Image (cartoon, rainbow, N blue to C red):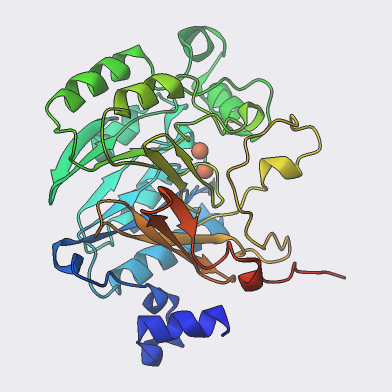
Length: 355
Ligand SMILES: [Fe+2]
Ligand SMILES: [Fe+2]
């Protein structure tokens, strides 16, 4: 059967489905459903000021749409995560405008720091809006940790640039060789170690970061320099999920006990690193590329995710604007997450073609 129709049937709400892509969300079923909960995740809106009250339309429309759709979710998520890069160049008008849109959410919202929010003033104004750069909280038996994974070496941050604006623009480019690898840093590693001390080993742990806490492609900073040290601290726990933004594409991976899942951007899709001619040939194989990247479609491969924690692992519904929605669920027998709607070649769409 056509996977989209199958999905609609599973979701069982065909009436609204025609109008609202959010109703395609598949909810938790089975014995554990009562104990489960859901949260929504929106990321990488990159609100960009043109001048005064004028902002790049594509970017703020993407966030406005995600907020509106999240407010319509049924059942309601327990909270919303925003995954970082709220702003493009981290200035006050951009952060204020982004924060104002996010404030329209009818749910408690937690926010992750992105490099575009940070490198102008090192997160000072962001802190006025959202408080600590890293923190943890507990919710219905799950321990959630938010890290600021986009800091870098002190000499790059403090000694190299004549202004915050210059520093920000050097870090903003995807493949700018003047950038510097992201990291969590010793101070946060120490904090994380202490934070985890009070958590039982069988408690599900979910870590939110902006950059991937794994090493995917250094040239584009799809990378966290001290990821290995973070992974080592998470290793003793039975169930760990790391969820990250920044890459503007679907990625998932499993390293030992840790499942890694990226979230989409509401602004624009980045290409997959292996499509880049100068990329090293030994990129880890972790992505099932989605069929997309229509350069003429401003919304292709952007969207947001609905996450289901009913098993203690995160199952996701990727809600893709202008593309077929996808589901990702943890397969307990196989011990890793699986792309339930896409992995089977039979379910794959043919590549798009252009004139
Ligand atoms: Fe981003
Ligand atoms: Fe980013």
